[in-house]
Image 1 (cartoon, rainbow over the protein chains, first blue to last red):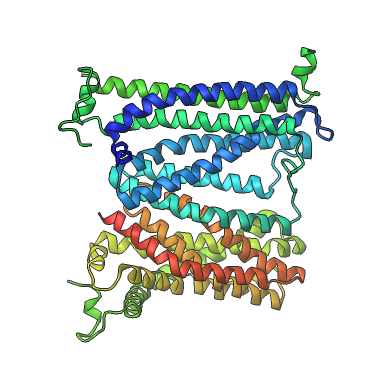
Image 2 (cartoon, rainbow over the protein chains, first blue to last red):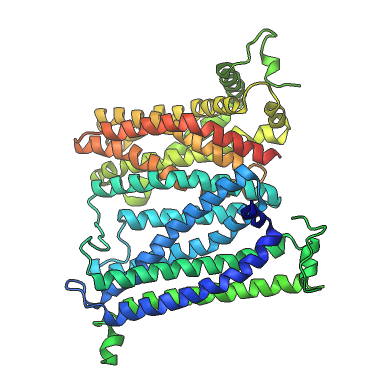
Length: 251
Length: 47
Length: 237
């Protein structure tokens, strides 16, 4: 099957290099249009005034934080089932971006909370779950960086993310439960009755973040591939002759 | 387009631009760091 | 030499239950030989709980309010500190590798170890907790709930903790790294465990919290030995 050809780092490297710029362009365009619509075209919110516009980056970043972790878990399952190096490399490439989005979700959430509900941090179900998600990202990064043996680091990281992802719904459910018990703030980011002029920029920004993440992760995985495969023959040939020789490569 | 009104964002400029600014900063930072990382490894593997 | 075979008669059947039992007996016996460690964990528990009145003042209403959370967090931390015991000693002297080669399924050996860990850590904590609850002014029925919630919850802590301990075997900065990995996963147990006690203090129904803990215990018992066994294999390869 031709798709498994790309399971090897040496073939994925040039593919990633070709795809990434496209996603970067898509991200830039979608982001520009989304920002324009969100900042200039969407009407002022009746209750919150102008400050509600933070939603156009808070929701996409929170969404990406969650999605990236799930994608990592999927790669983790592949890494443990098929024992492919590239799956672990993708996990390693996804984690920093996922962590960044989580921090941004928390930051924008805090800056939105202060003018709207009077406090920077409101221990509500969603923000608390996002905080715990950040701990999960940091834990993964700490684990793979602490283990010197790359093969062991790959597998341990994969197992950790799989266990973590099983726990994410449990954590979210338990935090929601805890929140209702303690009558915390119930933060409604938006009702289902969202003005279409607000929904469009939100969607565009979400897709922009998605495209951005794909581009950045593909570039990062190229770096990781070079770092880990630096001894391989195909890497040496990259800057030598124009053709990519696969012979002798530890593909 | 009243730019003063736009920038003040209903006097919540700090929060709105603090948010959008943080996102811009983070994205720039991530790209810059990634560039540095790629350059470093490419220098290493260049024969 | 098969470490478990030494304790089993020649005619012992190789079954899952026997694997769990033998591993439990072995770890229990080893723990009993260093009884001091178990006592130390209990003393740590008591000390940490006692820190809170010293930190927040001895006003009885406040102490009663924070008691469930304080007792639970202290129990969590006490379990955390004893987690390395599950695998580290066996890992260091090569016994763990031999256990992996035993005819018993690895998941059963790991399950037996988890059980022994709980029996020598979580269970004592659950039994000592009422004394601490009294210090915080909790009533009789609430003390009962605290024992129940800890008895149901601490096995889950041992199970999740074993996965974390196995993942970080022999790794630099192991203990604090393990804590970092395990504590976020402990949060649901903490929420429902402390929540059960708080519910009983508020006079509302606490059965839901306890049943969720029970469900978590069942889920953990089914899944965690396999996850921890996988982690041990990863650490040894």
